[in-house]
Amino acid sequence: MSCVRLLAIVPLVVGITAGQGGAQAGRDSAARGGADSVRPPARLAPQRASADSLQAPVSPGRAFLHSLFLPGLGQSRLQRPMAGAIYAAVEALSVVMLLKAQGDLRLARERVDVGIVRSYRVDPVTGAPILSGEGAFQPLDSLPNEFGPERIAARRAQVEDWVAVLVANHLFAGADAFVASLLWDLPARVGFRLLPQGLGFGLAVRW
Image 1 (cartoon, rainbow, N blue to C red):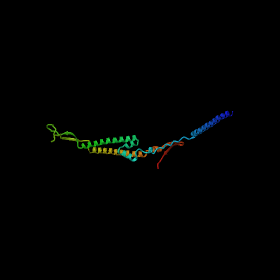
Image 2: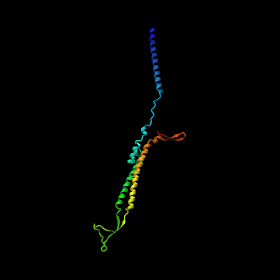
Image 3: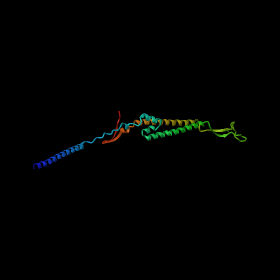
Image 4: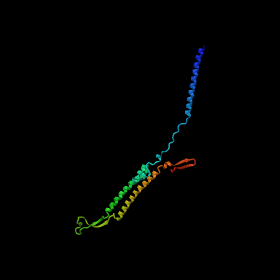
């Protein structure tokens, strides 16, 4: 009878021990789960604007030289295609008109001594034209042509004007590229913001 009681007690003790172990494991798991659920999420590092994003693709000096030698090149390097196209178009127009003005001046110089013949010398008896020793007709009366000294001076002034336009386009393009490179980060440092009192204007200045 005592043996039967002892065998009955042993399974009971084993069951209680196993139950306590399972309960303890459950509490540990719950504690770990609770700690994990309470743990704050990892904070993401704030994304800061890199210095490269506020730096111009070309330095002011290089931008000035690029547009000084080839108007529009500095603007294209600074991602300003519209301004570059305008300077390039003015450059092409100035070159074409300068070549035309130089051609007109050359023509005026070549024909300054050429007159318009109204009549030639003829034999009063036969009416045949009188030829020179070289066999050319001898002019009797002539009119001055349109390419006189005044026309040459006007054509020379046109050439000088187009040269001035060409030089000015190079200088303006270089200055524009220089300023655009200096103010490259201006849109990132100047802006408007809606405030409770109204519209606000912000400006960040580097020292």
